[in-house]
Image 1 (cartoon, rainbow, N blue to C red):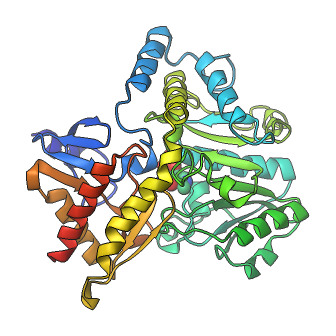
Image 2: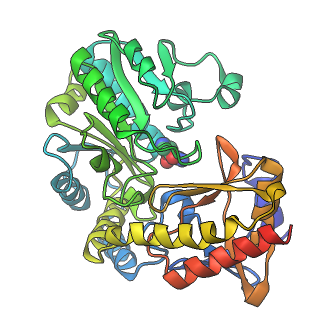
Image 3: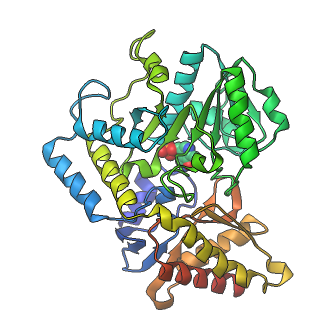
Length: 405
Ligand code: PMP
């Protein structure tokens, strides 16, 4: 059996139609498959590879850490240099009240930790989340997921969850002194790039403050520069009580975190002791990689280039989409390098995605996919380092494919 057949028969599957491409190399904004076919990567590992694939400084940091030590002890007991250096560095680029970083091995675990921390700290039970939100796939995170289709088969889920409409002022009234925390993505990603109004996020912040409810912002997908500022919440002039990080946090290695004020965070250390524990959170190799990637993000001024690249994408696409006949109408939403092209339905979107991946014009294809709660939207969320030339090439391919359908 070849690797593709082994993948299909021996690796746990998440769908009946996986892409099942075998990638053998990745560099910058490119993926290369086993046939040496090259793809412009418009996904970046789903907002993980913000500084591109294979950055030499990240690779060097990983190699250096591997030579020193890998796993030595469960999270939270030993002083591990990459972990403390990274926690300190993150704190110094966050508002003063976000000064204690609890490392996990994934984004979902960060969500779980923040839910537990909120209950423990406030001594309340209700958790509020929003329609079309995605915070992970474990049972707690699934319980607050904002889409019944994906949740229903796994009931019973956590009790005392209230789901409100994202961006609805009216619904904020339902947050009360019973609410332990409200969890929201600063920009909803899997809903197909939904940007809330500044007034709404500010009102949400105020409501949480008035009721003593902790505001948890999930920047697992929209953090680390993806939306044009280092943290998306900066653009809304608010500060969360707990921040969820993941994906790009590990520079390509698995790492998640929830960040809070030490006064809040310390409540996980007593009554009961070891209130939240894990084996691999803050793995030294992952922290070394994440720290190196974070430094690159800052040193190479990558975040500053995001809005200009967004404009290039939008200009290239919108200047042409007006020419499309009514039967092929599309619309575009974006926030930084998180862009959704909306088609009439999933079938059209899927055939565009498949054609982009299959294309071999000049040996270059385009790698993209759809959004979990917006299957009619095509995802454009490349490494933030994508070149202008690749942006234009990718847009040309997208235009060709849509026009020829
Ligand atoms: N929150 C958001 C906004 C996400 O996009 C994701 C992953 N897609 C998660 C949480 C869960 O992260 P992980 O897959 O690392 O558990």
